[in-house]
Amino acid sequence: MNNITRRDFLNLVKRGFAATGLTALLAPVVAFFYPPSLEETPSEAVRVGTIDDIPPGESLAVPFGRYPALVIHTVEGFKAYSAVCTHFACICKWDSEEQVIFCPCHEGYFEPLGGEVISGPPPLPLEKIPLTITDGEIFIGGSA
Ligand code: FES
Image (cartoon, rainbow, N blue to C red; front, top):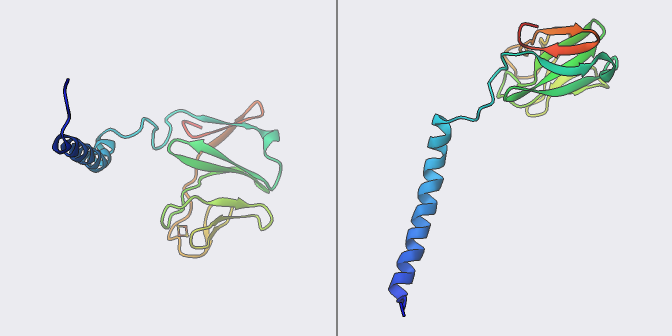
């Protein structure tokens, strides 16, 4: 019969803690060199939905590569922007009551017709995403 001594047991526990700590240290390094397969910005157009899915004055947040995009039905038609705030990259939202895009992190406000900054700390407008409508279907990105 193979008896385990107290010393062996403690060595085993110590090795377990060391392996856990090493994994915690190396995981970010491995993640850096092998990022998730999601593209930063999709090379192909992304289907958003139909024009009926977004009533006038409303918006839809859709996945667009690694980050969401906002598709807004404005008074000038449909517009699409990256939802990533140009200040510190928080995710912006659509305020349908005020009809503005806002960033909840530091109260940045953007206008919906061009993505320009209305107020707050964002230094640049939101990034525009090309949008096309084909047979009532909305597509963003790609060669749209
Ligand atoms: S991150 Fe958007 S206003 Fe600061």
